[in-house]
Image (cartoon, rainbow, N blue to C red; front, side):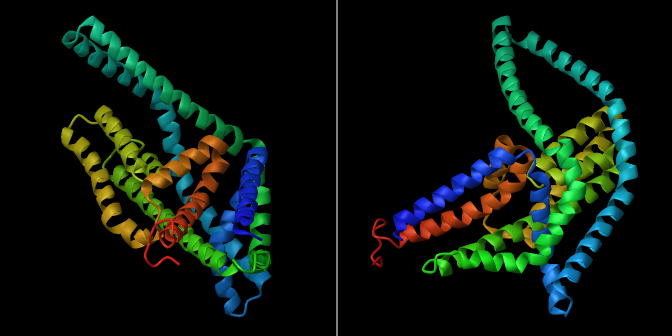
Length: 354
């Protein structure tokens, strides 16, 4: 098969995958979650298998341990999160009223500084930007809530996901071997090499970044509680989880926390303490956690990660966000491979090109 024809075949496969996601995105969440769990737990099953434990028994043991650990974390965190979340919902109207009053004061000051024509221009510009942002955020939220949190997916997460994860864990090596057997023989070594790079990139980034998110979430939550901030634990946990999107978690969590602190505390030093928690957290993340746990070797630029997550969420809802990182890792590795091939080609003009 000629290179051009092979390229055409791979393009058809990619388009078929995109079409499949578009058609079945409403029911894919349990299956995607099961695949993700199996992917991350497979090394543990492999280790048990090397110790003489059968693949089926190893998959059951690892899944059971994962379920017990997850359930234990929920038992520890759920009471605190539930209490603070209920209090936050009850206090939210008061915070909105305070925000409206602050905006009214800012508006009055601006009206004293600018002419009516300038104020009208500012108002129109702000209204346009706010409407655009709200519409875009609402569309993404609607897709996420309409697909990711549909009843069928909630039931599937509890029932289908463990089953999918178990069978994939049990048959993982067999599935990989079967896929390897379908590769074109001439290109198989190159494809295997690129697939290994994609696996290294994805595993290194996601496993490392997940650890960073957990450490940041618990750290922010505990420190904000010690600082006396109302709803500090839930805001900290939220900030840590959102830190999966580079820089967004610390910025968004910091703004929310400082806003709550300004409303709650009369002393500016306590507000400064809340701000210092996020400044310190960002410093620890950037200088220690991310270099140690994620590292630069994964080759996923933060801007590329942010774009992939937002694009996936916009196109396919929550399922798209889950698929976005593997797709970003694959595209990044393949793009670097394509650049290497280009630099070795006559088209680039290298003297070493054959």
